[in-house]
Image 1: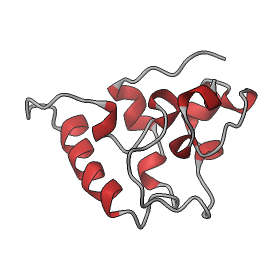
Image 2: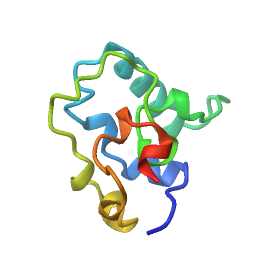
Image 3: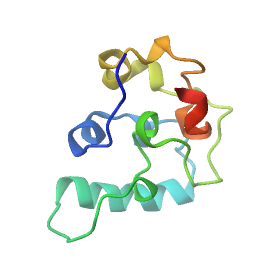
Length: 105
């Protein structure tokens, strides 16, 4: 198991922004639009900061959005990053978006 780095290629593989946990979040929706602009059209001059990206929580830790619904099923275990980094082997691996970074190490 290795640490997940906060990199654009991994953000592109990430499923977080498609997750049912975040699907009704107004906060996530706004960040998702900005993230897609930055990740797929990186000519905007904006920096890619974890607090702007509603994805790759297995790298950056909990979301700053307070309107997510963790009563829904998350997609963590369906993500290629999950398999590539053996994230099933860590303590409390699901719902990275709601956990403090210390809880996912």
